[in-house]
Length: 512
Ligand SMILES: Cc1cc2nc3c(=O)[nH]c(=O)nc-3n(C[C@H](O)[C@H](O)[C@H](O)COP(=O)(O)O)c2cc1C
Ligand code: SF4
Image (cartoon, rainbow, N blue to C red):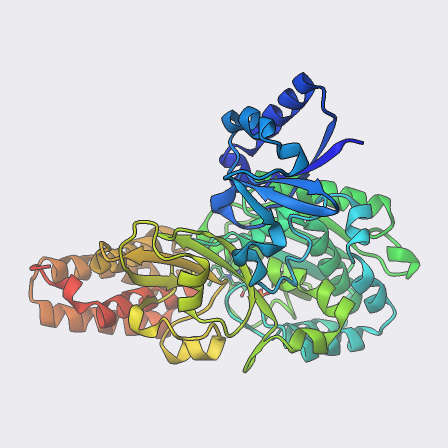
């Protein structure tokens, strides 16, 4: 019998040489006359171990990593195919501490199944949730989502059930479900990993949403820089359609729902939901005035559910195991789990799915292993380029929407970027203004003009020119941007700026 191996086809693994490792494994096996079969899977999220090679041995998957192509011959000689000991052997994946300490609900199948195989998906619990949802009324489905406590994972943490209820209640000849897969935040990659590693979970989640609220068409607005995810999604959609999970009569329910992938236009603001809708309609991505909300007048003026990838991909497990099961994870009003992304100056970057409540310190040190440089971690930015900079004094804050608001920060999409003590926080504050100036859609003055003036004021502060007066001016400008901007781009740029000023004032002095 052929020895079964699993190697990730995730973009990060490929960037680290996974394809070359696969070719080397095939070549060495052929040369030694050993029969092997390699399944390309999603990544387990332990990026520092990629390319990770898993060998099936006595019903278990034994991990070796990082396995580069040049190491393959020696590893095979040492008994890789029989899961023999080696310096790169880590035992069962589930026993690796980084993995063992996680609570994988949304990412339960990622790294285990063939991403585009409907059979493999079903064999691992897929489509149980949809079958249950199809047996319920739209109102009952919406209630279940509300009961689960799910809040939008795209950044704003708005209760998903409330959004769906609004769409359900609209009378319209056409409704849509749009998945926000623009994933523009720095240090984030959970959407990408999910779409590459288990796209059928997103397909199932969108089908639950569509059939519940009465939408017959769904669009995945995919970041243009994610070609691997695009391939995986298109293949998964075609396979689901061929098996009757998409189309005019989803699973014989009499309900229609189908899906298309659309490539994004490449600006950060395309991720803001109303400019995303403009872009989907073929126009320039410019933010719309609200009201009306997209739930009432969204894509092409029709009621539209617009949710982030992870919000939608959390639905299958909620319907498979029930709202109470999901709600039992988490703390306060932050229910369920969050796929957290560890990035920046950390020893062990990667994806950690945990229930809300885990502290930053646990994430940075227990999972992340501290800084890669070996120097003290001085600041972390959570929630993308518009997230606040958090100092060490707040590292014991639990990951919880309300706890983060209380310290002037945000959880956002769960991306954590770590900086060691060599970081210059004045430069980081300046960068936030610069980012806003470059990415502004230009529709409103506080953001369009304010960000450019913001760069100038910070430059004057750094140069020591009239520092006190300019610091006051900067605070005033931030206040105007916060309260006067039309969307979160201009409205949240003050977070990194004022947090840097507040927690790291010394960096804004010339003596620094
Ligand atoms: C400037 C800006 C960029 C955004 N980028 C994204 C993004 O890349 N992905 C995303 O899901 N949400 C993004 N959002 C949030 C969306 O506007 C919206 O809240 C989200 O798609 C709603 O889905 P959810 O309720 O499932 O989170 C962004 C918001 C702003 C203001
Ligand atoms: S805040 Fe910036 S990105 Fe948002 S609408 Fe105004 S100009 Fe456009």
